Image (cartoon, rainbow, N blue to C red; front, side):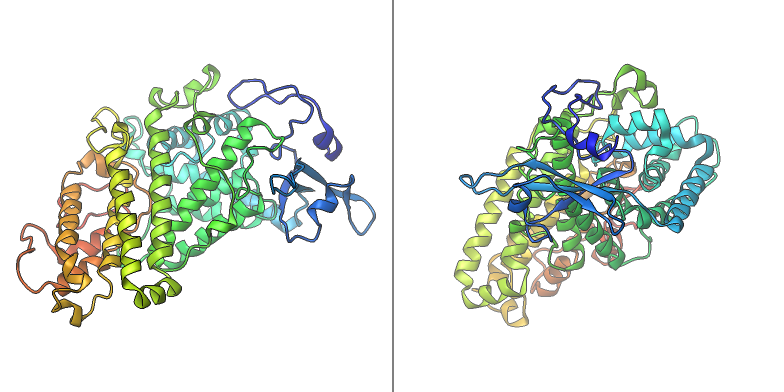
Length: 518
């Protein structure tokens, strides 16, 4: 499709699930143009959006040739207070060495996995997707079947790498030595992604998000700074393709609206949780996005695998699973509460405000505590820890509940501020007043960890951080033995919980025993 066809084309597009979209001529797509990508035009970009809305325009290069187009997806409304929304539609002209690196990375990835590529895809959608459903399943499977090289090497490599962690879970593969290492695939995928980001699109956003889940070193005490920079890259890529802007009223296909919303909220969660991991302020703040809330229907898109692709996945992965969608939606809601907590208690400005007015600060935190307790009381039954049966252990609710405990204990850390030696011996201090409730939460967390089964440990957890420094605060400020827990080794907790990467290969669910990672 050339630029003119893309902008003015009136042909309806088939959705990835096989449904035909409306034949209205105004329906467009920002994706799927051959050698074309759409770059978001923000309000402070070189071109004024209101001026662009007044006339037809194209982008000329220095040789007076058309180098790109400008597509309007929403005319805006002064009455509603919404600006016009435009995208640059640019040709993907890469430097020759960029193409060389991408091609070499792609060949290396395919050479490493060899005939096992389809098996890695199957394992990915069985074990990773139910917990982290960011890849557009049917679109990926369709592209993989028709021409797998049309999928960027970064995304192919990341899917293969994450699927390979479950090699031994496949009855046909476990008797065969895996002929490659996971890091080899991630390394090649990363090399390709560095060049692919000259032309960001939704495939590459998905790759950015998966790159954060490479297996961490087992001897790390603190999360690597690299994870923080990878998170920033995911946010930047998402913003470049306009995921931070609400697509609900845009003249694009419904499937694309749903996918854009899903990827934005996945990026948002990534940013908030890596913020907690590193103690840095999030890159995303509330005024920086308008993307509307994700719905169950948005997540239903692209999940039902048609018959001609059904042989590429297990039966459990072939249809839409409500628990997968609910898991994702509930983690978004929990992360929004975490965001409020970070704004309220964990910035230099909020700390100063707290020290100047502790009463108001405490009241805000207690409101957040209420919200957390309400969330835990109202979550759907399908995302509780009791729901995951032995039949489908890969539909793992553990990461969601680990995130809940992390948020709740971070909240108590804020409530007990300032945790000083003076406060330790002051019965009226917030440290003393909330100490008992905090220890009850710690006990609940330890009970949660003890209940995780070996199958649960082998399921996908991703990279999650637990604020273990809080345990140090609790132990360091205890002035009697009321809250001693002799059945657990606090000394070993940081080794287990930081950076809280629970990945396949763990053989024990005893919290006092450090688990070896594969």
